[in-house]
Length: 100
Image (cartoon, rainbow, N blue to C red):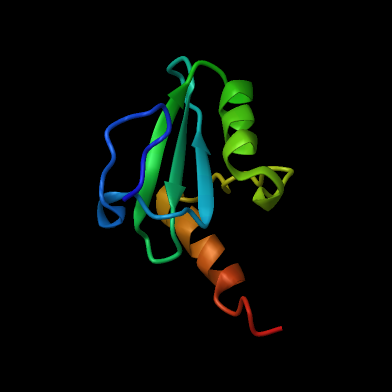
């Protein structure tokens, strides 16, 4: 059994969200920023709203520490689906991990 942060009710490991391979930070005209987490298999790993970009980045640093690659890379403007772009970007770079 595992426990979510904040002391929530313990749940089985199969119900926990997967560990993310890539993070996507979305900012638009609305106030705040959304931080999305995905695996390279396109599994959703959770999302959180933050009042500012800086707060979202701070949360990412808190959650992922040294595993977080900075600086953040912008999604090219000609990309129609930033979620797919982030997942594919991670897959292209992580597909050979562990083979070096």
